[in-house]
Amino acid sequence: MQTSQSFGIHFTTRPDKAKDGKEPIYACVTVNRQRAYIALKQNVDPKNWDGGKGAAKGNKEDVKYINNYLEEVRLAIGNSYKELQIKRKMLSAKAVKDLYLGEEAQVYSLAN
Image (cartoon, rainbow, N blue to C red; front, side):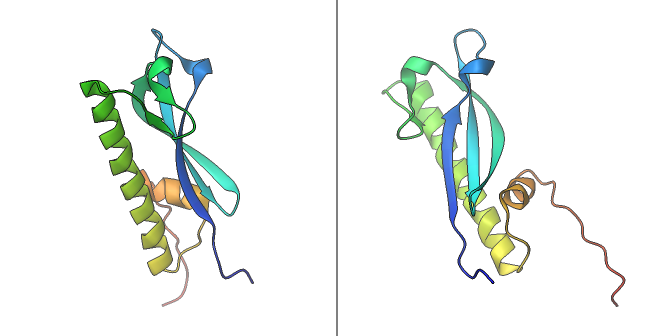
């Protein structure tokens, strides 16, 4: 039985889904090498994206807004992971994603 979990969050863009010269930003949640992507409904100019850091670069107001938003998302996803740990629920990238998005699966049992 595996007792330790690997968990990570990084942000990436999807050049193949670019519109009006801007690429959508996705959060990639990784739990034990399983990945789940979450569309964040934020777009960034590819010139202002640092793929290595997974953050927008520059000093403009919209760049600061995006980076603040990404930190809020990182915190919320981390809290979802911790909540699953505390409740001793099944830990997977999909479970973290579902909880973050408010789509947590209800488990029904016949036990009283």
